[in-house]
Length: 533
Ligand code: F6P
Image (cartoon, helix red, strand yellow):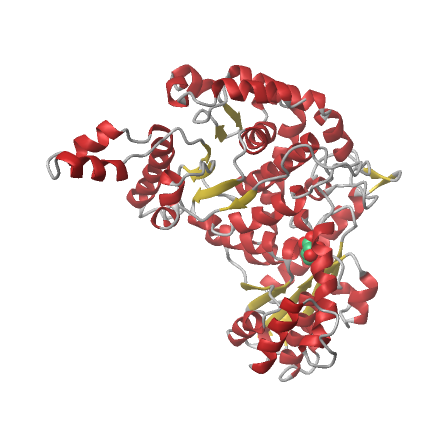
Protein backbone atom coordinates (compact mmCIF):
# COMPACT_ATOMS: atom_id res chain seq x y z
CA UNK A 1 0.00 0.00 0.00
CA UNK A 2 2.95 2.34 0.53
CA UNK A 3 4.78 1.60 -2.76
CA UNK A 4 2.89 4.01 -5.01
CA UNK A 5 3.38 6.85 -2.56
CA UNK A 6 7.05 6.06 -2.19
CA UNK A 7 7.48 5.98 -5.97
CA UNK A 8 5.64 9.28 -6.31
CA UNK A 9 7.79 10.81 -3.58
CA UNK A 10 10.96 9.65 -5.35
CA UNK A 11 9.77 11.45 -8.48
CA UNK A 12 9.00 14.78 -6.80
CA UNK A 13 11.38 14.89 -3.83
CA UNK A 14 13.92 17.19 -5.46
CA UNK A 15 11.62 19.77 -6.97
CA UNK A 16 11.00 23.14 -5.36
CA UNK A 17 7.36 23.12 -4.31
CA UNK A 18 7.34 26.90 -4.31
CA UNK A 19 6.96 26.63 -8.09
CA UNK A 20 3.59 24.90 -7.57
CA UNK A 21 2.12 27.67 -5.44
CA UNK A 22 -0.21 29.85 -7.45
CA UNK A 23 -3.69 31.20 -6.83
CA UNK A 24 -5.37 28.00 -7.90
CA UNK A 25 -3.28 25.89 -5.53
CA UNK A 26 -3.89 28.36 -2.69
CA UNK A 27 -7.62 27.80 -3.15
CA UNK A 28 -7.37 24.05 -3.70
CA UNK A 29 -4.88 22.86 -1.10
CA UNK A 30 -7.01 23.91 1.86
CA UNK A 31 -9.76 22.28 3.88
CA UNK A 32 -12.29 24.49 5.57
CA UNK A 33 -15.14 24.05 8.04
CA UNK A 34 -17.11 26.90 9.48
CA UNK A 35 -14.54 29.62 10.01
CA UNK A 36 -11.59 27.31 10.36
CA UNK A 37 -9.12 27.00 7.50
CA UNK A 38 -6.38 24.38 7.20
CA UNK A 39 -3.89 25.40 4.54
CA UNK A 40 -1.36 22.87 3.25
CA UNK A 41 -0.42 24.67 0.02
CA UNK A 42 3.14 25.18 1.30
CA UNK A 43 4.04 21.48 1.14
CA UNK A 44 5.33 19.25 -1.63
CA UNK A 45 2.01 17.43 -1.89
CA UNK A 46 0.54 17.81 -5.39
CA UNK A 47 -2.75 16.59 -6.84
CA UNK A 48 -1.35 13.16 -7.65
CA UNK A 49 0.23 12.80 -4.21
CA UNK A 50 -2.98 13.91 -2.55
CA UNK A 51 -5.01 11.37 -4.53
CA UNK A 52 -2.60 8.61 -3.49
CA UNK A 53 -2.82 9.73 0.14
CA UNK A 54 -6.61 9.77 -0.02
CA UNK A 55 -6.45 6.22 -1.44
CA UNK A 56 -4.85 5.18 1.85
CA UNK A 57 -8.08 6.09 3.61
CA UNK A 58 -10.05 3.64 1.48
CA UNK A 59 -7.38 0.95 1.65
CA UNK A 60 -7.39 1.04 5.45
CA UNK A 61 -11.18 1.38 5.84
CA UNK A 62 -10.99 4.66 7.72
CA UNK A 63 -14.67 5.48 7.11
CA UNK A 64 -15.90 2.16 8.48
CA UNK A 65 -13.55 2.38 11.47
CA UNK A 66 -14.61 5.97 12.16
CA UNK A 67 -18.24 4.86 12.16
CA UNK A 68 -17.35 1.94 14.43
CA UNK A 69 -15.71 4.33 16.88
CA UNK A 70 -18.70 6.68 16.99
CA UNK A 71 -21.11 3.77 17.37
CA UNK A 72 -19.41 2.35 20.47
CA UNK A 73 -17.64 -0.70 19.02
CA UNK A 74 -14.67 -2.03 21.05
CA UNK A 75 -12.00 -0.54 18.81
CA UNK A 76 -9.47 -0.45 21.68
CA UNK A 77 -8.85 -4.14 21.10
CA UNK A 78 -5.95 -4.72 23.49
CA UNK A 79 -8.04 -3.46 26.41
CA UNK A 80 -11.42 -4.61 25.09
CA UNK A 81 -12.94 -1.14 25.32
CA UNK A 82 -15.01 1.23 23.25
CA UNK A 83 -13.55 4.67 22.47
CA UNK A 84 -16.28 7.17 23.09
CA UNK A 85 -14.95 10.50 24.29
CA UNK A 86 -17.17 11.86 21.52
CA UNK A 87 -20.21 10.90 23.64
CA UNK A 88 -19.10 13.43 26.26
CA UNK A 89 -19.71 16.27 23.79
CA UNK A 90 -22.74 14.73 22.11
CA UNK A 91 -24.89 17.50 23.60
CA UNK A 92 -27.83 17.28 21.26
CA UNK A 93 -27.04 14.08 19.42
CA UNK A 94 -28.93 10.83 19.53
CA UNK A 95 -28.36 7.80 21.73
CA UNK A 96 -24.90 6.24 21.93
CA UNK A 97 -24.95 2.54 22.65
CA UNK A 98 -22.31 0.56 24.53
CA UNK A 99 -23.07 -3.14 24.99
CA UNK A 100 -26.71 -2.50 24.13
CA UNK A 101 -27.12 0.37 26.58
CA UNK A 102 -27.59 4.06 25.79
CA UNK A 103 -24.85 5.90 27.71
CA UNK A 104 -26.17 9.40 27.01
CA UNK A 105 -28.55 9.74 30.01
CA UNK A 106 -25.63 9.08 32.38
CA UNK A 107 -23.27 11.41 30.46
CA UNK A 108 -25.80 14.26 30.55
CA UNK A 109 -26.65 13.59 34.18
CA UNK A 110 -22.96 13.83 35.18
CA UNK A 111 -22.61 17.02 33.15
CA UNK A 112 -25.61 18.50 34.98
CA UNK A 113 -24.12 17.51 38.37
CA UNK A 114 -20.80 19.11 37.40
CA UNK A 115 -22.64 22.27 36.40
CA UNK A 116 -24.53 22.46 39.70
CA UNK A 117 -21.33 21.95 41.67
CA UNK A 118 -19.37 24.45 39.59
CA UNK A 119 -22.11 27.05 40.01
CA UNK A 120 -22.29 26.39 43.75
CA UNK A 121 -18.55 26.99 44.03
CA UNK A 122 -18.52 30.00 41.71
CA UNK A 123 -21.50 31.65 43.36
CA UNK A 124 -20.41 30.97 46.93
CA UNK A 125 -23.05 28.42 47.96
CA UNK A 126 -20.36 25.78 48.38
CA UNK A 127 -17.79 27.22 50.75
CA UNK A 128 -14.61 26.19 52.50
CA UNK A 129 -14.11 26.57 56.23
CA UNK A 130 -12.99 30.14 55.59
CA UNK A 131 -15.80 31.14 53.19
CA UNK A 132 -16.09 31.43 49.42
CA UNK A 133 -13.68 29.25 47.45
CA UNK A 134 -10.92 31.42 45.99
CA UNK A 135 -8.61 28.71 44.63
CA UNK A 136 -9.08 25.34 42.97
CA UNK A 137 -6.13 22.94 42.89
CA UNK A 138 -6.37 20.15 40.31
CA UNK A 139 -4.10 17.25 41.21
CA UNK A 140 -3.62 14.85 38.31
CA UNK A 141 -1.04 13.84 35.74
CA UNK A 142 -0.94 13.02 32.02
CA UNK A 143 -4.46 13.14 30.62
CA UNK A 144 -5.81 14.16 34.02
CA UNK A 145 -3.70 17.31 33.91
CA UNK A 146 -2.51 18.31 30.46
CA UNK A 147 -5.95 18.84 28.90
CA UNK A 148 -7.51 21.00 31.61
CA UNK A 149 -4.21 22.81 32.30
CA UNK A 150 -3.85 23.68 28.61
CA UNK A 151 -7.49 24.73 28.28
CA UNK A 152 -7.62 26.80 31.47
CA UNK A 153 -4.68 28.79 30.16
CA UNK A 154 -6.13 29.02 26.66
CA UNK A 155 -9.41 30.36 28.01
CA UNK A 156 -7.87 33.03 30.26
CA UNK A 157 -9.93 35.83 28.64
CA UNK A 158 -13.10 34.02 29.76
CA UNK A 159 -12.11 33.41 33.40
CA UNK A 160 -14.63 34.67 35.91
CA UNK A 161 -14.36 31.95 38.55
CA UNK A 162 -11.86 30.93 41.22
CA UNK A 163 -8.14 30.81 40.42
CA UNK A 164 -7.16 27.37 39.08
CA UNK A 165 -3.84 25.70 39.78
CA UNK A 166 -2.44 22.42 38.51
CA UNK A 167 -0.17 20.01 40.33
CA UNK A 168 1.10 17.01 38.42
CA UNK A 169 4.72 16.17 39.18
CA UNK A 170 5.69 13.92 42.07
CA UNK A 171 8.61 16.33 42.53
CA UNK A 172 7.62 18.03 45.80
CA UNK A 173 8.67 21.37 44.32
CA UNK A 174 5.50 21.30 42.21
CA UNK A 175 2.91 20.93 44.96
CA UNK A 176 4.87 23.00 47.47
CA UNK A 177 4.92 25.96 45.11
CA UNK A 178 1.19 25.78 44.45
CA UNK A 179 0.10 25.25 48.05
CA UNK A 180 2.24 28.16 49.22
CA UNK A 181 0.07 30.46 47.12
CA UNK A 182 -3.27 29.15 48.50
CA UNK A 183 -5.20 29.52 51.74
CA UNK A 184 -6.36 26.05 52.85
CA UNK A 185 -9.56 27.50 54.32
CA UNK A 186 -10.77 28.73 50.91
CA UNK A 187 -9.25 26.10 48.63
CA UNK A 188 -11.01 23.23 46.86
CA UNK A 189 -8.76 20.31 45.94
CA UNK A 190 -9.82 18.22 42.95
CA UNK A 191 -8.14 14.83 42.72
CA UNK A 192 -8.29 13.90 39.04
CA UNK A 193 -7.35 10.33 38.27
CA UNK A 194 -9.16 7.92 36.03
CA UNK A 195 -7.76 4.92 37.90
CA UNK A 196 -7.23 6.60 41.30
CA UNK A 197 -4.05 4.55 41.65
CA UNK A 198 -1.47 6.70 39.85
CA UNK A 199 1.40 7.04 42.30
CA UNK A 200 2.20 10.69 41.58
CA UNK A 201 -1.41 11.80 41.94
CA UNK A 202 -2.16 9.79 45.05
CA UNK A 203 1.07 10.97 46.69
CA UNK A 204 0.25 14.61 45.93
CA UNK A 205 -3.36 14.11 47.07
CA UNK A 206 -2.18 12.87 50.46
CA UNK A 207 0.25 15.77 50.72
CA UNK A 208 -2.61 18.19 50.01
CA UNK A 209 -4.78 16.41 52.58
CA UNK A 210 -2.09 16.84 55.25
CA UNK A 211 -1.59 20.51 54.28
CA UNK A 212 -5.28 21.22 54.57
CA UNK A 213 -5.58 19.25 57.81
CA UNK A 214 -3.25 21.70 59.55
CA UNK A 215 -5.95 24.40 59.52
CA UNK A 216 -9.21 22.89 58.30
CA UNK A 217 -11.13 20.56 60.61
CA UNK A 218 -13.05 18.60 57.96
CA UNK A 219 -10.55 18.27 55.11
CA UNK A 220 -12.69 15.76 53.20
CA UNK A 221 -15.34 18.45 52.76
CA UNK A 222 -12.98 20.49 50.56
CA UNK A 223 -12.00 17.63 48.29
CA UNK A 224 -13.66 16.45 45.09
CA UNK A 225 -12.70 13.52 42.86
CA UNK A 226 -12.87 12.83 39.13
CA UNK A 227 -12.48 9.13 38.49
CA UNK A 228 -13.84 5.87 37.15
CA UNK A 229 -13.04 4.16 40.49
CA UNK A 230 -15.87 5.02 42.91
CA UNK A 231 -14.67 2.47 45.49
CA UNK A 232 -11.22 4.06 45.68
CA UNK A 233 -12.52 7.63 45.94
CA UNK A 234 -14.70 6.48 48.86
CA UNK A 235 -11.68 4.83 50.54
CA UNK A 236 -9.87 8.16 50.21
CA UNK A 237 -12.74 9.77 52.15
CA UNK A 238 -14.39 11.85 49.43
CA UNK A 239 -18.15 12.13 49.72
CA UNK A 240 -19.95 10.58 46.69
CA UNK A 241 -21.79 13.87 46.15
CA UNK A 242 -18.45 15.38 45.07
CA UNK A 243 -17.29 12.44 43.00
CA UNK A 244 -17.79 12.79 39.25
CA UNK A 245 -17.43 9.49 37.50
CA UNK A 246 -16.88 8.38 33.95
CA UNK A 247 -16.55 5.08 32.17
CA UNK A 248 -13.53 3.18 30.90
CA UNK A 249 -14.45 4.05 27.31
CA UNK A 250 -13.02 7.52 27.94
CA UNK A 251 -9.24 7.34 27.49
CA UNK A 252 -7.14 9.50 29.86
CA UNK A 253 -5.73 11.72 27.11
CA UNK A 254 -9.21 12.16 25.61
CA UNK A 255 -10.97 12.92 28.88
CA UNK A 256 -11.08 16.69 29.22
CA UNK A 257 -14.61 16.81 27.76
CA UNK A 258 -16.10 15.17 30.84
CA UNK A 259 -15.42 15.32 34.59
CA UNK A 260 -11.67 15.81 34.02
CA UNK A 261 -12.68 19.21 32.61
CA UNK A 262 -14.20 20.31 35.94
CA UNK A 263 -11.43 22.80 36.71
CA UNK A 264 -12.01 24.42 33.29
CA UNK A 265 -15.71 24.63 34.04
CA UNK A 266 -14.92 26.23 37.42
CA UNK A 267 -12.76 28.83 35.69
CA UNK A 268 -15.03 29.82 32.79
CA UNK A 269 -18.48 28.69 33.92
CA UNK A 270 -20.86 26.02 32.61
CA UNK A 271 -22.12 28.06 29.64
CA UNK A 272 -18.65 28.63 28.21
CA UNK A 273 -17.79 24.99 28.95
CA UNK A 274 -20.84 23.93 26.92
CA UNK A 275 -19.62 26.16 24.07
CA UNK A 276 -16.32 24.25 24.22
CA UNK A 277 -18.24 20.96 24.00
CA UNK A 278 -20.31 22.32 21.11
CA UNK A 279 -17.11 23.15 19.24
CA UNK A 280 -15.91 19.57 19.71
CA UNK A 281 -19.23 18.23 18.51
CA UNK A 282 -19.10 20.49 15.43
CA UNK A 283 -15.76 18.93 14.51
CA UNK A 284 -17.18 15.43 15.09
CA UNK A 285 -19.99 16.11 12.67
CA UNK A 286 -17.63 17.57 10.11
CA UNK A 287 -15.31 14.55 10.44
CA UNK A 288 -18.26 12.19 9.94
CA UNK A 289 -19.83 14.00 6.99
CA UNK A 290 -17.27 15.90 4.89
CA UNK A 291 -15.67 14.39 1.79
CA UNK A 292 -12.10 13.40 2.46
CA UNK A 293 -10.57 16.24 0.48
CA UNK A 294 -12.59 18.79 2.49
CA UNK A 295 -12.22 16.93 5.77
CA UNK A 296 -9.88 18.74 8.17
CA UNK A 297 -8.95 15.80 10.42
CA UNK A 298 -8.39 13.54 7.41
CA UNK A 299 -6.25 16.05 5.54
CA UNK A 300 -4.25 17.01 8.65
CA UNK A 301 -3.57 13.30 9.16
CA UNK A 302 -2.59 12.71 5.54
CA UNK A 303 -0.15 15.62 5.58
CA UNK A 304 1.32 14.06 8.74
CA UNK A 305 1.62 10.64 7.07
CA UNK A 306 3.25 12.22 4.00
CA UNK A 307 5.87 14.02 6.06
CA UNK A 308 6.66 11.27 8.54
CA UNK A 309 6.09 7.91 6.89
CA UNK A 310 6.82 8.96 3.28
CA UNK A 311 9.35 11.81 3.45
CA UNK A 312 10.96 10.40 6.60
CA UNK A 313 10.84 13.59 8.67
CA UNK A 314 11.00 12.27 12.22
CA UNK A 315 9.55 15.21 14.11
CA UNK A 316 6.91 17.87 13.67
CA UNK A 317 6.84 21.26 15.32
CA UNK A 318 3.54 22.70 16.52
CA UNK A 319 3.89 26.46 16.59
CA UNK A 320 0.87 28.40 17.85
CA UNK A 321 1.06 32.11 17.09
CA UNK A 322 -1.41 32.43 19.92
CA UNK A 323 0.16 32.74 23.32
CA UNK A 324 -3.01 31.44 24.95
CA UNK A 325 -2.11 28.07 23.40
CA UNK A 326 1.16 28.01 25.28
CA UNK A 327 0.53 24.51 26.59
CA UNK A 328 -0.88 23.08 23.35
CA UNK A 329 2.43 21.47 22.28
CA UNK A 330 2.74 19.70 25.66
CA UNK A 331 -0.88 18.58 25.43
CA UNK A 332 -0.34 17.28 21.90
CA UNK A 333 2.79 15.46 22.94
CA UNK A 334 0.70 13.16 25.08
CA UNK A 335 -2.24 13.01 22.69
CA UNK A 336 -0.12 12.12 19.67
CA UNK A 337 2.89 10.31 21.11
CA UNK A 338 1.08 8.20 23.70
CA UNK A 339 -1.53 7.33 21.08
CA UNK A 340 0.59 6.63 18.02
CA UNK A 341 4.02 5.83 19.45
CA UNK A 342 3.52 2.09 18.90
CA UNK A 343 5.85 -0.39 17.20
CA UNK A 344 3.38 -3.16 16.42
CA UNK A 345 0.12 -3.21 14.52
CA UNK A 346 -3.19 -4.33 15.99
CA UNK A 347 -2.40 -7.99 15.21
CA UNK A 348 1.01 -7.83 16.94
CA UNK A 349 3.17 -7.67 13.78
CA UNK A 350 6.06 -5.21 13.53
CA UNK A 351 5.09 -1.97 11.81
CA UNK A 352 6.47 -1.81 8.26
CA UNK A 353 6.88 1.99 8.55
CA UNK A 354 7.81 4.49 11.24
CA UNK A 355 5.43 5.01 14.14
CA UNK A 356 4.05 8.49 14.85
CA UNK A 357 6.48 11.42 14.95
CA UNK A 358 8.11 13.29 17.80
CA UNK A 359 5.87 16.28 18.47
CA UNK A 360 7.26 19.42 20.01
CA UNK A 361 6.92 23.18 19.87
CA UNK A 362 6.53 26.54 21.54
CA UNK A 363 4.41 29.58 20.82
CA UNK A 364 5.54 32.09 18.24
CA UNK A 365 7.22 34.49 18.33
CA UNK A 366 9.22 33.10 21.28
CA UNK A 367 10.47 30.10 19.31
CA UNK A 368 11.82 32.41 16.59
CA UNK A 369 14.45 33.61 19.05
CA UNK A 370 15.31 30.12 20.21
CA UNK A 371 15.14 27.12 17.87
CA UNK A 372 14.00 28.54 14.50
CA UNK A 373 17.66 28.82 13.51
CA UNK A 374 17.74 25.04 13.24
CA UNK A 375 14.35 24.91 11.53
CA UNK A 376 15.61 27.26 8.80
CA UNK A 377 19.25 26.23 8.37
CA UNK A 378 19.73 22.92 10.20
CA UNK A 379 20.43 19.82 8.14
CA UNK A 380 17.17 18.07 9.06
CA UNK A 381 13.81 19.12 7.69
CA UNK A 382 11.16 19.77 10.33
CA UNK A 383 7.61 20.18 9.06
CA UNK A 384 6.01 23.07 10.94
CA UNK A 385 2.37 23.37 11.90
CA UNK A 386 1.42 27.00 12.51
CA UNK A 387 -1.78 28.07 14.26
CA UNK A 388 -2.98 31.64 14.13
CA UNK A 389 -6.06 33.66 15.07
CA UNK A 390 -7.27 36.62 13.02
CA UNK A 391 -8.04 38.49 16.22
CA UNK A 392 -6.70 38.46 19.76
CA UNK A 393 -8.65 39.44 22.85
CA UNK A 394 -6.85 42.71 23.59
CA UNK A 395 -9.06 45.34 22.00
CA UNK A 396 -6.57 48.12 22.58
CA UNK A 397 -3.57 46.26 21.11
CA UNK A 398 -4.60 45.45 17.54
CA UNK A 399 -1.32 46.67 16.17
CA UNK A 400 0.60 44.17 18.27
CA UNK A 401 -1.65 41.33 17.14
CA UNK A 402 -1.13 42.29 13.51
CA UNK A 403 2.61 42.13 14.10
CA UNK A 404 2.15 38.61 15.49
CA UNK A 405 0.16 37.55 12.42
CA UNK A 406 2.78 39.05 10.09
CA UNK A 407 5.46 37.04 11.87
CA UNK A 408 3.50 33.82 11.49
CA UNK A 409 2.98 34.32 7.76
CA UNK A 410 6.59 35.41 7.30
CA UNK A 411 7.89 32.19 8.81
CA UNK A 412 5.99 29.89 6.48
CA UNK A 413 7.04 32.07 3.54
CA UNK A 414 10.68 32.01 4.63
CA UNK A 415 10.60 28.23 5.08
CA UNK A 416 9.25 27.81 1.58
CA UNK A 417 11.29 30.42 -0.33
CA UNK A 418 14.57 30.42 1.49
CA UNK A 419 17.37 32.65 0.19
CA UNK A 420 19.72 31.77 -2.66
CA UNK A 421 23.47 32.31 -2.68
CA UNK A 422 23.05 35.12 -5.22
CA UNK A 423 20.50 36.86 -3.00
CA UNK A 424 22.77 36.40 0.01
CA UNK A 425 25.74 37.89 -1.89
CA UNK A 426 23.67 40.86 -3.04
CA UNK A 427 22.61 41.62 0.51
CA UNK A 428 26.17 41.99 1.79
CA UNK A 429 28.08 43.02 -1.34
CA UNK A 430 28.61 46.50 0.11
CA UNK A 431 30.37 45.07 3.17
CA UNK A 432 32.58 42.29 1.77
CA UNK A 433 34.27 41.24 -1.43
CA UNK A 434 36.29 38.40 -2.91
CA UNK A 435 36.67 35.18 -0.90
CA UNK A 436 35.33 36.83 2.22
CA UNK A 437 32.12 37.79 0.42
CA UNK A 438 31.74 34.17 -0.69
CA UNK A 439 32.36 32.80 2.77
CA UNK A 440 30.05 35.28 4.50
CA UNK A 441 27.33 34.79 1.90
CA UNK A 442 27.22 31.03 2.41
CA UNK A 443 26.30 31.53 6.05
CA UNK A 444 23.31 33.62 4.94
CA UNK A 445 21.83 31.06 2.55
CA UNK A 446 18.51 29.43 3.43
CA UNK A 447 17.75 26.27 1.48
CA UNK A 448 13.99 26.90 1.66
CA UNK A 449 11.73 24.18 0.26
CA UNK A 450 10.76 23.36 3.86
CA UNK A 451 7.11 22.43 4.34
CA UNK A 452 4.60 23.96 6.71
CA UNK A 453 0.86 24.09 7.25
CA UNK A 454 -1.28 26.81 8.79
CA UNK A 455 -4.49 26.42 10.77
CA UNK A 456 -6.22 29.80 10.82
CA UNK A 457 -9.34 30.75 12.79
CA UNK A 458 -11.12 34.01 13.69
CA UNK A 459 -10.45 34.09 17.45
CA UNK A 460 -9.70 31.59 20.22
CA UNK A 461 -13.19 31.31 21.73
CA UNK A 462 -14.35 28.28 23.75
CA UNK A 463 -16.09 26.95 20.63
CA UNK A 464 -12.97 27.31 18.50
CA UNK A 465 -10.82 25.65 21.17
CA UNK A 466 -13.25 22.72 21.16
CA UNK A 467 -12.92 22.46 17.39
CA UNK A 468 -9.13 22.55 17.52
CA UNK A 469 -8.85 19.83 20.17
CA UNK A 470 -11.37 17.53 18.46
CA UNK A 471 -9.55 18.14 15.17
CA UNK A 472 -6.28 16.88 16.63
CA UNK A 473 -7.99 13.92 18.32
CA UNK A 474 -9.45 12.78 15.01
CA UNK A 475 -6.16 13.38 13.24
CA UNK A 476 -4.55 10.94 15.67
CA UNK A 477 -7.35 8.46 14.98
CA UNK A 478 -6.90 8.65 11.20
CA UNK A 479 -3.11 8.33 11.38
CA UNK A 480 -3.51 5.39 13.77
CA UNK A 481 -5.92 3.59 11.44
CA UNK A 482 -3.59 4.09 8.48
CA UNK A 483 -0.69 2.70 10.50
CA UNK A 484 -2.90 -0.18 11.64
CA UNK A 485 -2.11 0.38 15.32
CA UNK A 486 -4.22 0.71 18.47
CA UNK A 487 -4.12 4.43 19.29
CA UNK A 488 -5.98 3.92 22.56
CA UNK A 489 -3.74 1.81 24.78
CA UNK A 490 -0.42 2.86 26.37
CA UNK A 491 1.51 -0.25 27.35
CA UNK A 492 4.74 1.64 26.77
CA UNK A 493 4.39 3.50 30.06
CA UNK A 494 4.16 0.36 32.20
CA UNK A 495 7.75 -0.88 32.40
CA UNK A 496 9.12 2.35 33.86
CA UNK A 497 6.34 2.39 36.48
CA UNK A 498 7.12 -1.19 37.54
CA UNK A 499 10.84 -0.50 37.81
CA UNK A 500 10.25 2.72 39.78
CA UNK A 501 8.19 0.78 42.32
CA UNK A 502 10.98 -1.76 42.64
CA UNK A 503 13.65 0.95 42.95
CA UNK A 504 11.95 3.03 45.63
CA UNK A 505 13.05 0.83 48.60
CA UNK A 506 16.56 0.69 47.13
CA UNK A 507 16.78 4.48 46.85
CA UNK A 508 15.45 4.76 50.41
CA UNK A 509 18.24 2.41 51.56
CA UNK A 510 15.77 -0.20 52.83
CA UNK A 511 16.84 -2.75 50.25
CA UNK A 512 20.15 -3.74 48.76
CA UNK A 513 21.14 -2.64 45.26
CA UNK A 514 22.07 -6.26 44.37
CA UNK A 515 20.48 -7.41 41.14
CA UNK A 516 20.50 -3.95 39.55
CA UNK A 517 22.76 -3.23 36.61
CA UNK A 518 26.09 -1.59 37.41
CA UNK A 519 25.19 1.82 36.01
CA UNK A 520 21.93 2.09 37.95
CA UNK A 521 23.66 0.85 41.10
CA UNK A 522 26.40 3.47 40.69
CA UNK A 523 23.86 6.29 40.31
CA UNK A 524 21.98 5.10 43.40
CA UNK A 525 25.32 5.12 45.23
CA UNK A 526 26.15 8.64 44.09
CA UNK A 527 22.74 10.02 45.09
CA UNK A 528 22.84 8.22 48.44
CA UNK A 529 26.30 9.60 49.12
CA UNK A 530 24.70 13.04 48.71
CA UNK A 531 21.93 12.18 51.12
CA UNK A 532 19.06 11.47 48.72
CA UNK A 533 15.86 12.60 50.45
O1 F6P B 1 0.96 6.66 32.65
C1 F6P B 1 0.16 7.03 31.60
C2 F6P B 1 -1.25 7.30 32.04
O2 F6P B 1 -1.93 6.11 32.22
C3 F6P B 1 -1.95 8.19 31.02
O3 F6P B 1 -2.45 7.51 29.96
C4 F6P B 1 -2.96 8.86 31.87
O4 F6P B 1 -3.46 10.00 31.24
C5 F6P B 1 -2.14 9.15 33.09
O5 F6P B 1 -1.30 8.03 33.24
C6 F6P B 1 -2.91 9.40 34.36
O6 F6P B 1 -3.73 8.32 34.71
P1 F6P B 1 -4.88 8.47 35.78
O7 F6P B 1 -5.86 9.45 35.28
O8 F6P B 1 -5.46 7.10 35.92
O9 F6P B 1 -4.25 8.94 37.06
